[in-house]
Image (cartoon, rainbow, N blue to C red):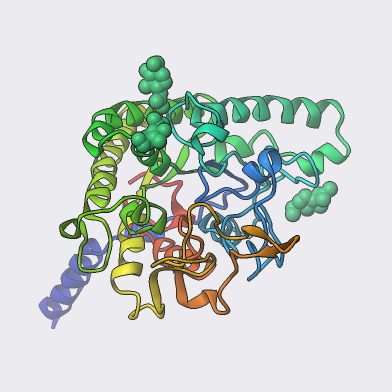
Length: 384
Ligand SMILES: *[C@@H]1O[C@H](CO)[C@@H](O)[C@H](O)[C@H]1NC(C)=O
Ligand SMILES: *[C@@H]1O[C@H](CO)[C@@H](O)[C@H](O)[C@H]1NC(C)=O
Ligand SMILES: *[C@@H]1O[C@H](CO)[C@@H](O)[C@H](O)[C@H]1NC(C)=O
C-alpha cells in the first residue's frame, strides 16, 4: 500500500515537472502601460496626425470612422491593450485628445528600422524610422515627468507615473518596410538580403537604448509573409514558378524568413546583453501565413483578395487604393470601396490585415504558444 502511494506521488511529481508549471504558476504582470514601436501593423494614429488622416472606409467595422489605423477596425496592439484592461494607445504625435496615462504609441505607417534617405513623397516610406521613434520616447519619458511633477493637475491624469516606465511592456512590430523599401527602390532581393544584418544591428541598438531608459519587458513580433500581400504580388510579374500553392510569392517570403531568423538570433544576443530583462520573440509570420494557407479552417473566405480596393486580380490598384476617389463628371466618387463582409477577408487593403484577421492572430499569440520563450502575454515580465 505504502509503496503504491509512493509511486503515485512520484509519478505525480514527474508529471508536474514535465509540464511548464513554473511559468504558469507565476503571477500576471499587471503591466500599467504599453509603449509601442512599429509601422502600419501597429500605427494607431501617428502617420494620420502628421501626413493626413487615413481615409474612410478605414475603421468602419469598429470606430466607426477612420481612427488613424489602416484596417477596418482594431489592430493587434489594440487587442493587447484591451487584454490588460488598458485603453487603446494614443499616438505620440497626436496633439489633440491624446491620453498617455497608460502608454504611448510611437509607430507610424511606412516606418522602417533604418533611417530613410528620401522623403515620404519620394519613397512612400515614413521619415519616422525606429531611431526617430526612440528620440520621441526619450523626450516623452523626461517631459512627461517634468509636467506631472511640476504642473500636476490634469497632467497627472494624462501622463504615466515614473514607475510605469520600468514596469511597462515595450512592444515592437517593425521590419517589413526595410525589406520592401530596398526592393521598391529597384534593388534585387539579393541586394536587400545583404543589408538585413545592418537593419538587425540597428534594431538591437534601439532595444538597448530603451533598456537604458528603464525598459525591462520586451515583446517583439517578427515580420509577416510579405509575399502574400497584394501590394507585392501586384507590383511585378513574379514568374509562375515563384508562386507557392497558395498564391504567395516565395522569394519574398524567403526574404522575410531570412530576416526573422536573424531577428530571433538578435533576440538571443539581446538576452545575453540585457540579463535583467524579459525579452519575448513572437512568431506572427507563421500565423499570418496560416491565415492565407488554411483560411477556410479559420473561417475566412478570401486569403489574398482585398476587401477594400478596386480592380485587378486582387481587387487592388496601387494608384487608387482603399478610400481612393476619382473625379467623374465633375463629382468626386469613391472608388476604393469596402466589401460588405470584412470578417471573411484576411486582407483589408492590399497591405494590411482586417480586424477579423488581427483578432484571430491575437487570440493565437496571447497564451504564448507562438512565443519564445512560450510564456503568455500577461506573464511576459517573467524571465525563464
Ligand atoms: C542612406 O544613405 C547612406 C549613405 O549613402 C547609406 O549608407 C544608407 O544605406 C542609406 N540608407 C538607406 C535606407 O537606403
Ligand atoms: C485618461 O485615461 C485614464 C485611463 O483610462 C482615465 O482614468 C483618465 O480619466 C483619462 N484622463 C482624461 C483627462 O481624459
Ligand atoms: C526604378 O526603376 C523604374 C523603371 O526603370 C524607374 O522608373 C524608377 O524611377 C526607379 N526607381 C528608383 C527609386 O530608382
